[in-house]
Structures are given as structure tokens and as C-alpha cells.
Length: 90
Image 1 (cartoon, one colour):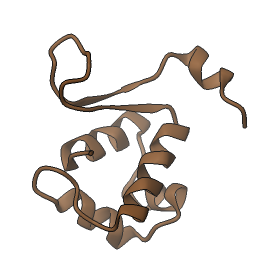
Image 2 (cartoon, helix red, strand yellow):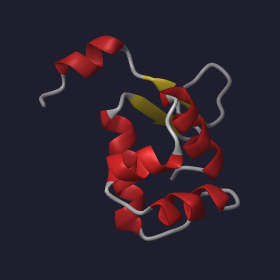
Image 3 (cartoon, helix red, strand yellow):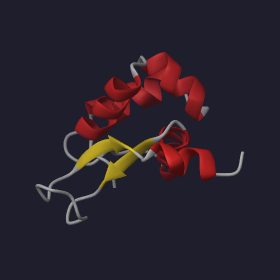
Image 4 (cartoon, one colour):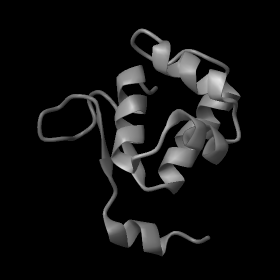
């Protein structure tokens, strides 16, 4: 799952607004707004959530879940290694 904080942080990493993310994901701006207004884990239609996560992945953002290896052990976002982006088929 992704938290509202992670979603906002991912947009900040990409330097994009809610409208741009909505266009990238093929969802509405109100959908992004509702997701970002969630407390804790993002709530919403699973299909819409997956579209947003996939759009962020395509843009090079890696979502770090809780209990997944990271230096401090918490949730977060980060850019994947640039080589991983070029190795992915278009």
C-alpha cells in the first residue's frame, strides 16, 4: 500500500502537480485529491490506485513499503537507479 504522504512526496520528487499526475495515470484530479487527503494508507478504488502507482513507477519513482530494506526502515519514496529505467522495455 501507499500512504498519502508517499503520494505527495512522489509528486514532489517529480516536480509535478495533481493535474499532471492525474493525466499520467489516466484518472481524474478529484481522485488524486481524495487519495492525497486520506489518513494513513491511501483509500480508493484499487484500479485507480494501481494506475497511479504504475504511473509513478513509469516516471522512475520507487515506493518503499514499511519493513522493506532501507537505511532507516520506514516508508518512503526514491528514484530508482537510472540504469533500471533504461533497461525497462518501452
